[in-house]
Length: 353
Image (cartoon, rainbow, N blue to C red; front, side, top):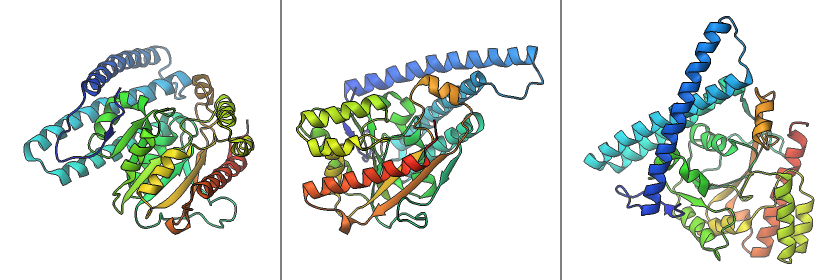
């Protein structure tokens, strides 16, 4: 599995044998799973026609199956379009048009996936006023490059945020993703010539992952936004306890005590974010809080929650680059303060269990 930092280039990039093998295996798995999904969907449709032709209500099983069909179709169609786009680029080498086509494909794929989630899972997304002292929600992102720092909160939250950045705010995301997502063939193809990094949330590599994130943030254009998730994974009570234990083992008792007061988020891991701030000191920082999917901790939770009874609620606030602390210890306290602010907002707005 490749952890290489992928950046756009003038032409098709050379790939390591491991990355090529991963893409081939990923496509084969996709085709196999898609075939099973389509066969199951056809069987379910025939069963419905024969046994309950007038039944309009979608049960949970049919909702899940419909989402699986939509996802498999998005993947297959998207890969076909990506292949045609690659052939055209190989012929004419038009970098600007290729980038626009790629962004259009990414935007369309995320939009169709969101519509399918709305139709079959009841997904609704709303923006609300900012937390604490904000009287109104901020309507527009600040001008210039941004570092967007979000919590992880349930399945699909990262895709929703990427769609909001692309479609609602006109930003081109440079995304830091867990390396397991590199196995998604369409995601791998769509990001092939956009800056991104597949990383291990627990790298243990002496800072090389943070350095790669810093490289990813370097040289951002005015419409770029680096999207990073400092928690490293979705919140669960077990991960929260492990994170607090890890801080204690490192002798960071003050930070462990602050982490103990967080109830709905994991304590942030600062290295990658701080590397991005060092590489792009001119960038404003946007903190994103959201809730509505964070109670879905397992496949069983997702099954029981369908259709979703409440919307996914987002809010955000920005910190101008000039107000971001420069000294390491002061900056860490600043990050923890904003993370505690996210935690308080989630506590007030999350679904009561």
